[in-house]
Image 1 (tube, rainbow, N blue to C red):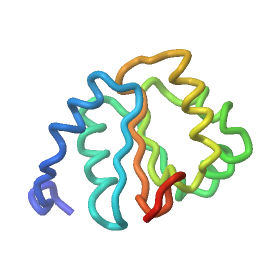
Image 2: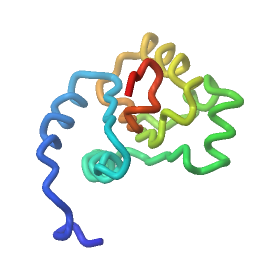
Image 3: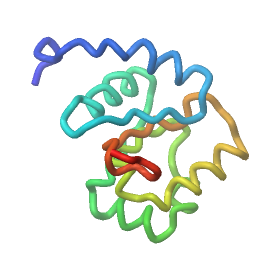
Image 4: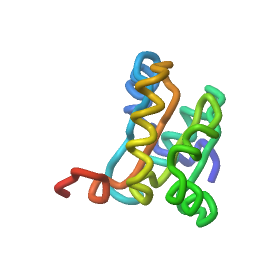
Length: 119
């Protein structure tokens, strides 16, 4: 799919704004609504590396050692399908509490499957 074939992401400026002052930003919504596309479009321009928990090796590594997984992430990371590894949220919180660098993590996942979600 070419960039010209994509619908405009009206929320992109707000995502960029949130990354300027927040250590982690979560994009969530229903399946197939463009969360990954948005995260990649915004993140690619800013040097983010992309990690998807649809990859069974990444999923396994994050689930078995969430703290070690988060500690090994690059300075800017997109975490796709984050709802698949709920254990990672505590590790992310610990890392963010130690270092509140804005824009460190851009995570995304399906709204109905995130911890605490009622959808």
